[in-house]
Image (cartoon, rainbow, N blue to C red; front, side, top):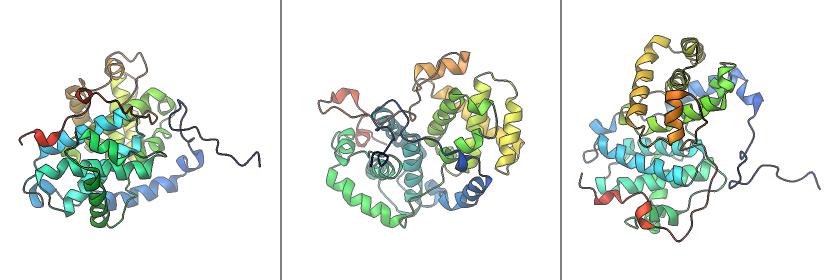
Length: 302
């Protein structure tokens, strides 16, 4: 009986929740399966042009930025934000909503993603709080069922985060540097807030994010890294350069919201950062200061 215990660390500890499985990460068949499945996980169309009449790209940018702030404050796992963004975009491809409902959709996507991608999910009560109670707990629960129905209960999307660890294994020894992974996952999260990346393949985003991380840290042979990773996901390295350059622009533009250590490392390659989506889950005290939380987006006149 002494052997029958869970050795994984609790979500609130400083240790990883679960160890990597080298068998899966080193098996080419797993990567091939993800490459085959990723088209079915992507938003099928540009919903700004063809579906949503009341939603503009800048509105998505504001709401997804708010979602990322919540994931940062709650120290969510990397995959929570990436999965929530996937749910968010796919839902907007199949269901017409009003702009006043966009934050509600974001909250519901975070709730579902946290249930699927980490041990301790976010609560509907906390998410309602982050909207300054412009969205009720009951609305979140009702829309959770709506979102599940519209997505056809397909809740296992392939995201860019899924590719990161698999690809890092293929660029030894650069890929074994923890700082490279931290920066790559940070860039993947930032890209998730940008409307122009909605229909870019997750594998392309992962390759571009890793390459941008290696290049930004002034590591040598970043072009070899790009060539190796592009070949691993069956993409043209030259065709990925615009994606890498766009990520560089996003990082430069959003550097004010990056943790200081990440920004400094991109310039000097010195200290290890704390990325917004690479922390362990933390509790939220109930004596909140309302001025320190993400603001109510329904008060913004789009």
